[in-house]
Image (cartoon, rainbow, N blue to C red; front, side):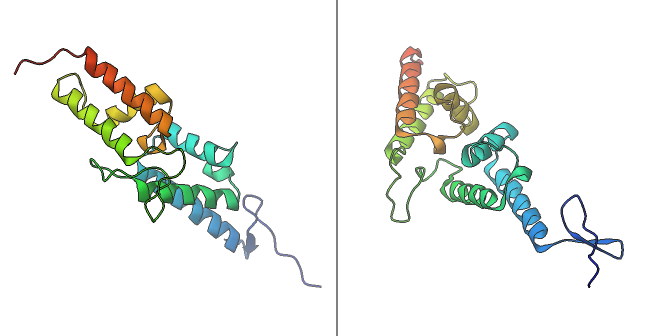
Amino acid sequence: MKPKRPICPRDGSEMIDGNQMESEAAQMRRAQIAAIHVRAKQLGLQEDVYRALILKITGGKNCAGALNSGERIAVLDEMRRLIEGHAWAPPRLRTVGDAPGGAPAPGAPGAAQLAKIHALWNELRKAGALKDPSERALRLFARRITGRDALAWLSADDANKTIEGLKSWLARTPARPQ
């Protein structure tokens, strides 16, 4: 009978001659968690937004370390989709769920709605109504209206609420003398 090798209680890897040897599963887990953190950084997610995204995808867990393999893959896939669909500068505005053929996902805002949001924001900037005309400030405005942390996550209804909020703000803004 072959003697059993000691198992590390922390991650289940084998111990050989007092040295820890990582199992393939532990190596994969570590690589997936690292990839999740890298993608979160690429998306510029703040801690609360990052945890909310994981919670939304997994339906109950808000920490990458607590996810099982399938959940980590689902989070990575969603983040990959967000990175591919993310446009940083006044973008070629993509909608959430853009298919390779260009058809938006059902319920996602169309490019026209997102373009209208950016156009109204630009009008407010020109009118001098904005203290901070950055993309971040626009996201914060949309979050206040809709509860969504990114324009890419808006539904068509959320986009309409944001447009109407921007229109109302623009209507209340006094005209600047030319």
